[in-house]
Amino acid sequence: MAGIFKAYDIRGVYGTEITEEIVGDIARAFVTFLGCRRIAVGRDCRLSSGPLFEAFARGATEQGADVIDLGLCSTPISYYANSKLGCDASVMITASHNPKQYNGLKLCREKAIPISGATGIADIERIVAERSFAPAAAVPGRIEKADVGADYAAFVRSFAAMPRPVRVACDFANGMGTWEAKAFEGTPLSFTSLYAEPDGDFPNHEANPLKTETLSDLQAEVRKGGYDFGVAFDGDADRAGFVDENGDIVPMDMITALVAEDMLKRNPGAAIFYDLRSSWAVKETIEEHGGRPMMSRVGHAFIKQQMREADAVFAGELSGHYYFKANSTAESSSLAALCVANIVSSSGKTLSQLVAPIRRYFASGEINTTLASREAAEKVLTTLKERYGAKGRAFELDGLSVEFDSWWFNVRCSNTEPLIRLNLEAKTREEMETRRDEILALIRA
Image (cartoon, rainbow, N blue to C red; front, side, top):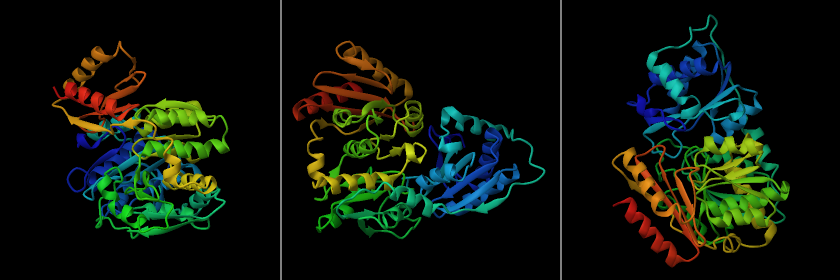
């Protein structure tokens, strides 16, 4: 059981690691830990999500909490519902971009404030293990239904600012992205759908735009012509990947820069966060449009906390998560797509033309190396710090980052897998490849 309690959520293989019994206990522990009385609960279309909802609802109501059943929805809608309905907690039953055999839970306090390993998941794990639940309530909680999908769509739609129509291809991967796309209806953004029917078997391809091979059908559709760009959603639609009008993949940090540009038109001088793996060009673009660029750690719990502390209006993460103050500092993949459409429409330029001046450096992409242990990873970080720390500007916001005049790198341990991750960027391709190989050799020595 211990392996399902992760840094950012609870997740495992359904039927063995995640079962109805365990989820019922997690619900009791969740209410015991938070003392919450009103929980908004949504779920994705995985075949196991319905039974797991029933199990969670039984456990939570047994402890006296009311459960607001959101039904099938995207994760961004569950965050929106948390605040919209005045709940003091919310849960999304999903395994996000993981394959179909997985399921899990994303947990939040009031105002969609995430619960991470450090802020409650470890406590919930302990309560489940010890079975130290609060006594069952004398009067059980109630289950009531609520549908905030139309309200969420209207909220996202209010950001539309397109002087000319925009046409988009959307790959929903048989997941929850169709719920996000309802926000496009009634705007100048029209879209063609791929794999729109929700199907928990994900029969066409894995619902994970981080795996570039899953984008091939979207690329082929866009290359038929007549599209301004394409968007691919993951399983619970809290992240999005983009291709330009030629069907070429647009790096997710470039999308951060473009969305920041649109948000700064509405919020001059605002703070914008970008994660520390992002290109130098993101920081520079935010500055060029009058914003205050701020660097964040990797991981939604950290980013959302930093956004709240700095009153930031937007943040983008290299993994395709885009966070908006207007949605309780939580993700909204449809709003990210709408902001890109706004820029394409108002600029009179194609997406590839907009991205070209931002792609001013050469990035390695994220390169993963499996190591034998956490101790081995820490040894790698120590070696790199000794080798490069004194020569450049070193900081340890998340792992080790070192910046030089013409290149930078970040090496960090994964929070969820036995991996060490390298991201590196340079002003020339030659230096990027040289420095990449140099550091990889040290990591893998």
